[in-house]
Length: 353
Image (cartoon, rainbow, N blue to C red; front, side, top):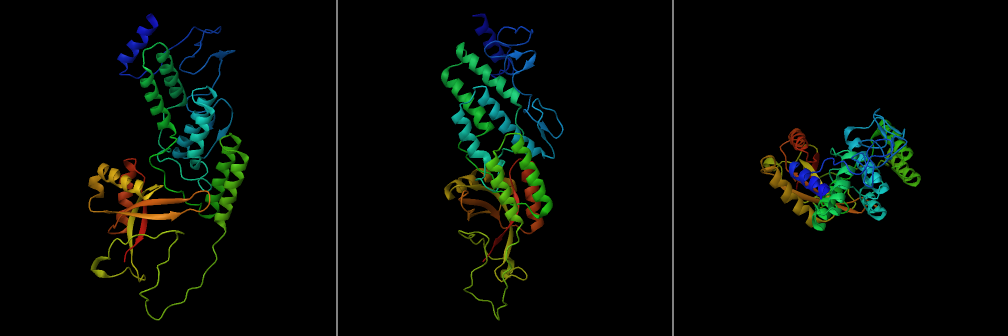
């Protein structure tokens, strides 16, 4: 009764968030232990924690981790992505998610680590995430609260699902835009170096490493140059060139005064790429949500959905673009503002009839 009351009191004082309830009896070394362990997530053996440090079991950009693996030269976004995969691995090893659940969530989002050979992951994996220690502690706390009947089964299930889905969703509502291949030798070398570190740290397998590295190397092979022949007069029936294998952009309307862009008989208008989806219907819903969230910034722009075939293993995606913009600099400024508000955005160009 006393333990149940203490848990309920902690829930009331924290507004429903048990940030770190100390559970169980002390171990022989005088540290938190017991069945659930403390917030550090586990009993102590010879005075050493059973699992890793706060954010991962790795070194990131020189920050030490307990397993001695070093991941250097990562951006903040890379660190956030790796932290999510490390946390999921810890949750699996501690029995807080099942191996099947781990495998499904990893496979759905492995494109965050293998962008050229896997479908795009859920959007937002590059955003900051609470540390491994915090998530483990919270899941253990609500598990203990369930056993003590301080939470109902439905309350426990809802909060657990919310936590794990926010960490790494199994069925993303929105996917990240497909990542472009590295441009030039320096970017390719950086990509291969990061792959080697991910393989050595156990985040990707040797086979996954080999496939992704081969894709990086293929991206460096220049495309064959196709000679162009200048036509005597513009043809009204000629199809505009496209980089996509399937589909073409829908016309956004003629350029101002009906004059095409210089040097282009069709006309190219600046626009912004906001997201990618698995279906045209999802892209339409995504536009409704994004426009509602950023109405002032997107006022006057129209949605443009283009179908893109990324080839075997990646499949079809529908890119949500918005435009037309007055200039490429206007598109860049809009993206800068949207990114500041944590919305993906990349300047792009669309054909205007």
